[in-house]
Length: 325
Ligand SMILES: NC(=O)c1ccc[n+]([C@@H]2O[C@H](COP(=O)([O-])OP(=O)(O)OC[C@H]3O[C@@H](n4cnc5c(N)ncnc54)[C@H](OP(=O)(O)O)[C@@H]3O)[C@@H](O)[C@H]2O)c1
Image 1 (tube, rainbow, N blue to C red):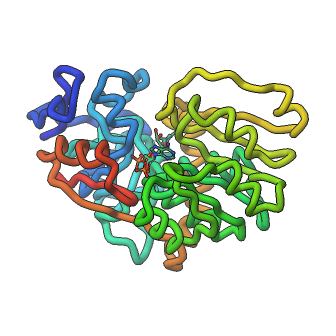
Image 2: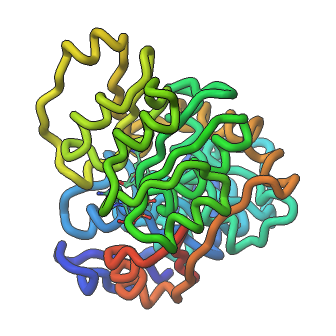
């Protein structure tokens, strides 16, 4: 098969299309012929040599795909050759074929095209596991979503809106904020011009955000804790602003707040399967009713993976970028 390899970590041109051996499904795995793969910021980190695949994961980048089941490993039940699926991966999605534990497969939702379904597994699993399973966002509460126009952000806004939460977003341009508003965000903060702590306080009568989904890490830690409501939960999922910062435990203690940091990719297969099962139960019906949708910004052929990475890094996109083998 053809796959994107990384012979030497580096800039976008480090992504090289090559002929590699077809993967064989291990017991409990399914082989999928890829229709599309989602591009995630983690793939950029892997390309640069900062985010090696976890032990046992395919070495090629790519954390989510859609496609057609082509072969079943020993002991797989509930899936058949020819099924149209999408899948949460630990790696290997930038390829014509990928093997995935059966517990990480989802059917393509009715009403979503096979290609667009590739934009769902990673963002939906990340948002559902963090905002709902971990931070327990409830109807009527306020959630602050940093980077609201990102792949993750566009899904977080829609799911929070669906549970009846109030959504505050940050983004770096008026056009991106307008896209967030159309998805259901009520309070729009241009982080280049406004202070999100002040804006969150103003929007909540001084109370703060019950949940914050953060992609910035160190750079926003102090201000995120300031923006938390009493009993608030800050979930850090990205370190775009660095990994080390000072935490004011006195302020956190007075607020009875929580700071949590998680990585989906590093979770064991049984936890990923539990998250995927929860997504299928809670999120898939919303997608099938057309209430929540994948937001696809652009598509590139697999061979043009460097162009797709450049587009992500230039950050003009709203939603997801896809690769199509
Ligand atoms: N821990 C996990 O399991 C997990 C899983 C998936 C994703 N993630 C993380 O989630 C984040 C989003 O991922 P993605 O794939 O959706 O990436 P993406 O589409 O490239 O989004 C990155 C976003 O960061 C925003 N941004 C940059 N500087 C900012 C600032 N100072 N304040 C607020 N936002 C800022 C950008 O918005 P502007 O262009 O407007 O600046 C852009 O929307 C990444 O940090 C990724 O690593 C974590």
